[in-house]
Image (cartoon, helix red, strand yellow):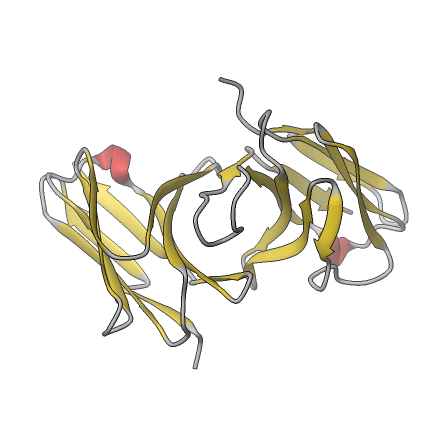
Length: 117
Length: 107
């Protein structure tokens, strides 16, 4: 079975550029999560979608960050304009229908390692 | 005080040793998750439990709801178990993460 697929695996770009991270959840999973991991702050939830609808975006750092889920099999996380402090590993995870965080485990993608110079 | 505390932060052991990683939490939870993050960065969900004990191969996870405490045990540890082990609790429609325990198993 294909797991959660993220692309690109690595991205290096200059500050001010637009960055787009992509995620394909596991088929049949209706919850999708974007996380950011840094040494200083660990894993942080950025946004959570349920049935393609954003439910909790309280973790999105600021207006430079936006996320969309146009259909059940694809989501994007955009940063525009990017800044060096956005450098981190960004993970996408998905889970089956059910009460999120409570009775369904999350399946993680391999992450996108983002470096903003 | 963090809502989810893991101990120890770092643990180095010899191959074959029995490993215990602890997780204490201060909030009401609906489930507790143990995850593993390998040096390459990938995150794998190991267990999700809300009571009792679960076992998968050499890994055992227990939870005591009254004491708000969970443990992850590894029997007959192996260098390939070297990873960061993360405890996270589901509470009020959010997932609260521990800081992780970095485990190194030496051959």
